[in-house]
Length: 575
Picture 1 (cartoon, helix red, strand yellow):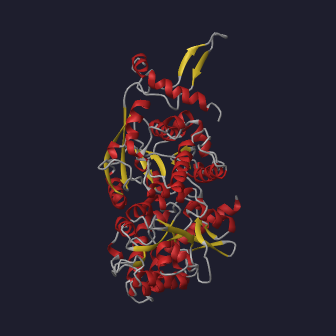
Picture 2 (cartoon, one colour; picture 1 turned 180 degrees about the horizontal axis):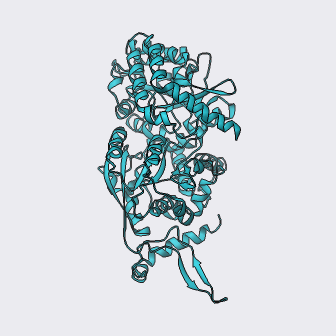
Picture 3 (cartoon, helix red, strand yellow; picture 1 turned 30 degrees about the vertical axis):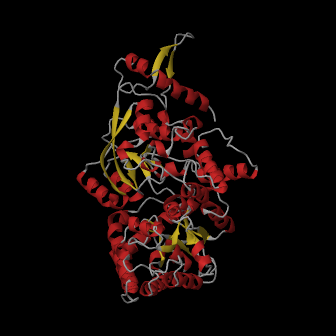
């Protein structure tokens, strides 16, 4: 990569020369801005460009808030808290940036807490936003213009990532020539729904992995009634489900997809599918959704779903999966990495596999977005150092390089899923899959890749080779299996997803614009209506309640949203 080795040398030199930098900055509070020096040619002044990895002369403090899940790697020291994340120590040493949390809460409480913070105007410097909250803060003129900060401070690698889609995602978050956020966009197929199922339970009951809804029902009933774990106790149920029906995990998006229903892309975002060539319709109110709800109701009555699902958040759903109470869950490619790895470590006999979601007549099509950018990073307009957010992204990317591999480990207190803002290579998962399998097929003993992807590829390669060899010296079986089976195994999470992509077994969510005016104003109310109506139906209310829901959804703003979405769709067709 152009100038990349130069950048790494600059970063290393900045560490050893930090004391000199601090003394010689003459009070410059940025310590890495453009500087001028006389030129020997024509007495002109040369301008030294800002250093993406430069260290501030004086400490710069930025504030954040965090909604967090437990560390994904079980080797993380017990009792560590987000403010103790080892990344922060390196960030301070390398760039003289200190992170202070205004508050931290479990991820299940984040949305409510952040809504209160927005209402009171008590926002941190660096903001992790979903599209709706981005649109709200944009309209309130609360977001800093990052155009200059990005142009001056984004590392070559960050710019390469942001330009990998032709700059499309960046343009989505640019308003009136102002870059208001940096999108964390990824391969859209990372959203592909799979069915995760315990193969050891299938084997114990002499059953095959299901390919249809009817087969799934029979397997799930057997998991309830036939003692699949062979412990001689009636303590298992069929399919995992938590109270938020359309979420980021442990929900039923994949089950609805099996009925040809596409109500949501996750996190309560309504999906929009084609109706002919020139119109989009909301998947949430289509007849297929009613059919799926009727099936869920019967499964609830028969004990296939846990009777207390309406009281379970995602953490409780995870507890059931890891403790061996349930053997089926819909979800994405990453489940082996967490939480299924925890189940493997608790029960060495446990074996999970991924299959394409069952449908009415055979394997079904999953809903896949055209753009996957569920979160973006923005900066509070009041922040004193907006460029610090860009430099922190540079830092996180840099920490994936080979030189940091021995240091940057979970057992040393590095918790990557607690660090923000973080941006990944949009093609990272495919890079890992390709490079690891290339090395495994060639029977290599180490990874020879030498770029910013090295750490991720090398970690998965080592986990895979250790798992395949039964080596648990450096990590548990679950940790090794989780990294390998999620990212590199040809029949694992991403391996199965790739086959679905290649076979065309997916349906696109056609709306990828920012939330419309009515979505911002009425979205939360409509989401609540859906959640309450669908939960009541699953728990036994008349299936005709769905028709009442559709009528209410349309009159309370759904029709307006449909018109706005189609106005947007019409504009795209012209471009």
